[in-house]
Amino acid sequence: MQLQKSQIELVLESNPISSGLNKKLREINLDIKIPVNELEHADYSNAKCEISHPTSIENT
Image (cartoon, rainbow, N blue to C red; front, side):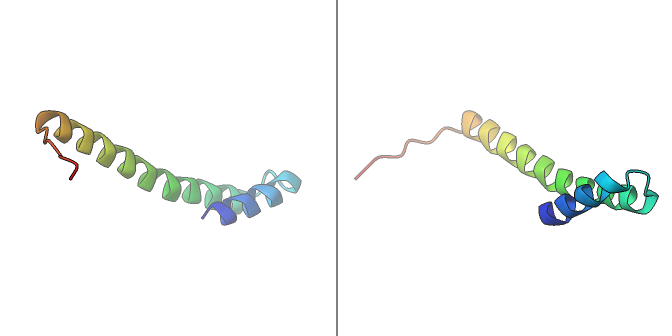
């Protein structure tokens, strides 16, 4: 997706008013943003759980 995004951004430099490319870029940005937000939420949930339920791990 990052490669597609870069390619579209490059083409948009020469044709910034292309509605089709701008729409595709918005879709790709959304496709990238959703998984990033999901990962951030999962990290937050994991940290919250670790704080609420601490475990002791002993090195053997």
